Length: 61
View (cartoon, one colour):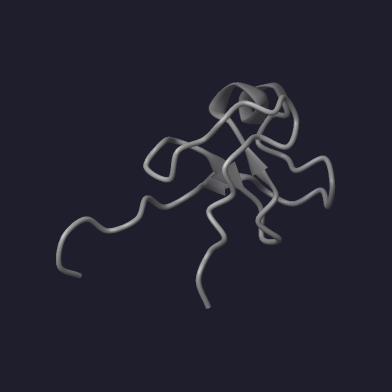
């Protein structure tokens, strides 16, 4: 199972490149760092913890 790597913040609509810092919950709700901080790292949709989204591997994995 792979992550969707959604391209924008669900709260403010800011664009998020795959290698840019972003925060996700277990359901992959996606937020920029500024919004995640304002939400105190709690997903407003499910109440779950927001954690930093992993960055994709570069080169040979």
